[in-house]
Length: 195
Image 1 (cartoon, rainbow, N blue to C red):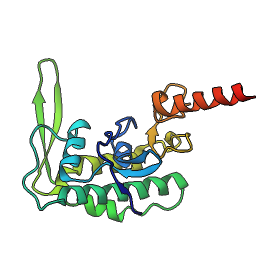
Image 2: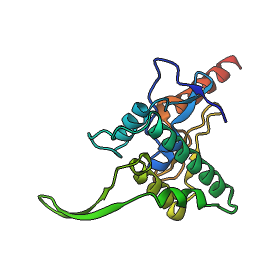
Image 3: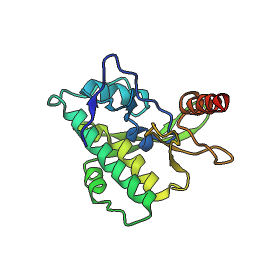
């Protein structure tokens, strides 16, 4: 599937899915009626990783140009396909995600904060794929343990964004009430007014 490059200036992809693996999928979205890929450069990917809390201030080492972007797009494509397979309820082919996961290396560290102990996973970050390992692990966790009755696509017909419905009533319909939910209310208001 081909995507239009993000038009300059591009809005940033929203972190509204309530799950990192779904936020990963949402880095392709409808903007002004066109499928837009927000990841055009390695810098776009790194900034998103930082905003999503996957990367700290340290920037990736100098990889080949677009290596991080290409690895992120490949992971996104694998995760998108697996989420669709899982939602359809059929067989899920995990081989591509497992191949990605084999590239990861990490160490566990026990950290003593002021008031508690916690375990921190320190990832090796020598390759673009290793920078993306927390996302690959998050996707694996979602696929293995997630409640796919709560993994949903926004109900607005022009929206392609996914979310994990963590609301108490489990009746979330929109990626964002401020955007798609509001569009729906405005459309209903106009329709009632015309009648």
